[in-house]
Image (cartoon, rainbow over all chains, first blue to last red; front, side):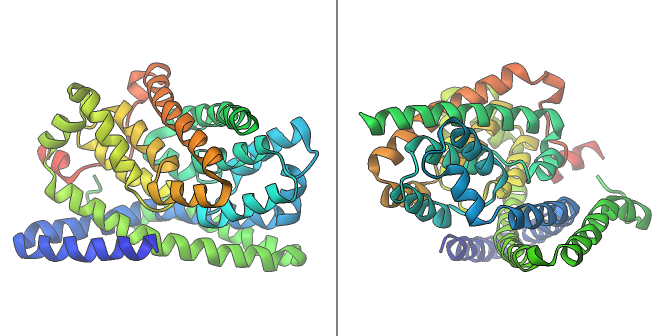
Length: 160
Length: 188
C-alpha cells in the first residue's frame, strides 16, 4: 500500500523533473544508481543476517519470550527480540495484539513494539556504512534505553 | 568520490557479502530443519528490500539534483532553529518503509548541510511517528496504548537527538557515504 504510493510519487516527480530539466533528471538517475550500488554489499550482509537469525526466532520462541507470566525476563527479552527482528508494522501490530489477547503483558509488548521500530541490530552494517560506527552505536543504545522507559510509561498509563 | 571503476575495489567491497552468502548456503545445508524458514524469510526480506529501496533511492536522486545546498542549510542547518527540527519531524513522519530506507536519505540531508541534530530527529520520526503506522497501531492495540507510546516517542526522539549531539564527538558527527554530487563538484 505504502509502496504503491511511493512508486506513484516517484513516477509523478520524475515526469515533472524530466520536462523541466533533462540534465538534472539524468543526474538524479545516476545518483540513484550509484547510491544503490554503494550500499549493495551491506544490503547483502543484512539480508543474510536477518534470514539466518529470524529462522532461529520462530513465532514459538517469540511468544514464549514475551508471552504471559514472563516477568522481568520477558520485559528485557521482548526488548531484545524487538531489537533483533525486522518485521513491518502491519504484521507486528496484529501479532502483538494477538499476544496481548492471549495474556501477554502491556510492558513487554510496548517494549517489543518500540525497539522493533527504533533499534536495528541486524541493520547495523548499513547504518554504520552511512554514519560511521560511533553514531550508529550511540543511536541504537539510546533508542534501546528509551524504549524501556517508553514501555514503562505505556504500561503505567494503560494500567491507570 | 570514485574516480574510476576498479575490479580490485569491487572485489574488496564484496568479499564479506560473498563470504556471508557462502556461510548462509552452509547453514542451509547443515541445519535442514531451519532451512525452509530461513529461505522463506530470505525471499520475504529480499522482496521488501528490492521493492522499497529503489523508489527511495530515486527520490534521493531527485532531492540531490533539485534541492540546492543553500536551501537545505537555511531550512535544516544549524541556524534553522525550531523550524528545522519541526521540518525534520514532518519529513520523517511522512515517510514510508523500514528504518533502513531512511539511512540513505538522512545521509544526503546531512551531506547537503542539515544539522546533525535534525538528521537524528528525522531518523527518529521515520522510525516511530509515521502517520499510517500510528493509525494502524491505534486500530490494533488501542488508542490508549498507541497514543501514549506516540507521546513518549515524540519526547524520546528529541531527547535522543539532543543527547547524540552532546555525546558523539564532533568529528564523528558525519555521514560517511551520503556524498552530494554538488559538494563533490565543488571540490573537484
